[in-house]
Image (cartoon, rainbow, N blue to C red):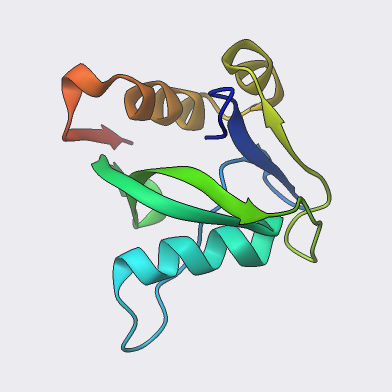
Length: 122
């Protein structure tokens, strides 16, 4: 999130609008992967504030670890993984995100009273 509490989203060529993220590389700490993926996909430098929770998509064999970060530098840039990037207020972010599971995950990340959360999707 930036200083205006806007949410950083990227437009993936396949999945449309989503939060930046990706895979952990061999011998890389999860926290390092979070910072690296955000930089690679958006051009933004972040500092991790806290761990938020985990979501599991059983039918896709995917587990996502959710972290909250704040912007500490960089500038918005597109990449092969990001056709567009930007900061959006919550309402606009939810309008842009088409995947209902992803919307639920974002709302869980923003609801600090549920930390750490665990959500399962079929």
